[in-house]
Image 1 (tube, helix red, strand yellow):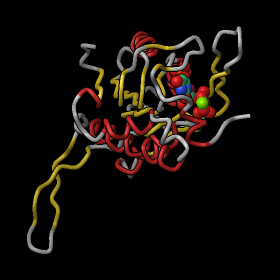
Image 2 (cartoon, protein in one colour; image 1 turned 60 degrees about the horizontal axis):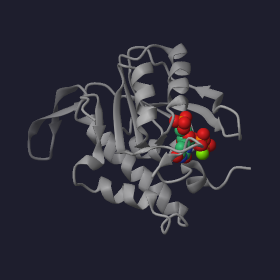
Image 3 (cartoon, protein in one colour; image 1 turned 90 degrees about the horizontal axis):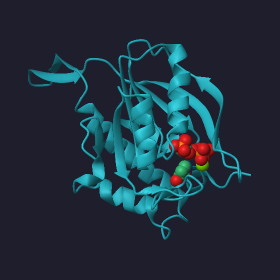
Image 4 (spheres, helix red, strand yellow; image 1 turned 180 degrees about the horizontal axis):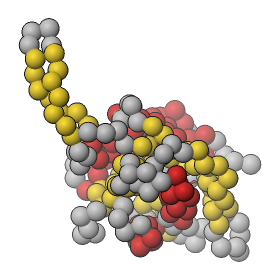
Length: 218
Ligand SMILES: O=P(O)(O)OC[C@H]1O[C@H](OP(=O)(O)OP(=O)(O)O)[C@H](O)[C@@H]1O
Ligand SMILES: O=c1cc[nH]c(=O)[nH]1
Ligand SMILES: [Mg+2]
């Protein structure tokens, strides 16, 4: 997909391909610690890629031997995520943007037979977003409904100057919906997959990210 606002890590050879491969692999899925850690490692890589596009300022650092100039972030981004599957990806980003403030949304898909997919949003705890650089991380961008509803809910806490959406895996349908609803967003993906199935799961995808990380919901 040719779009300068969409960045897909696995389109070039790098360790991101290892992390995404393990996230998908049914033979690794029994190990929830490894699943969470792979999401976290991907979050670290996505944070690093995003960091290359952020504004910097020059500062002087004093070593034991001399003073030297270096670049530091002009400002910290705000990191946001959607509970619960978003936590490990968010945690990876927080490992790198280690002084960032955070915003949390509790949203989940109501997956019922014969009814249209609905997103329940029941919790929102946000820092001030006015004029901030916002990075919203959620591992699965399937229909895009969770991401867009969460982002629009966050806007009551201020309009960010810049918005980045980060996901491990996206479906083309969800990507198109997000681009239509939030055209200003910069989108960062581990991988862009083929399609959604009849239950709005990403194919080939990885299954249910929340269940694989934290166990099945009842
Ligand atoms: O693009 P969408 O079609 O909205 O689907 C994506 C959402 O699905 C997953 O969460 P889920 O609803 O399974 O909740 P969970 O984190 O509790 O597992 C995922 O973490 C996204 O938030
Ligand atoms: O494929 C999908 C779609 C939504 N949520 C997931 O965890 N996986
Ligand atoms: Mg889930």
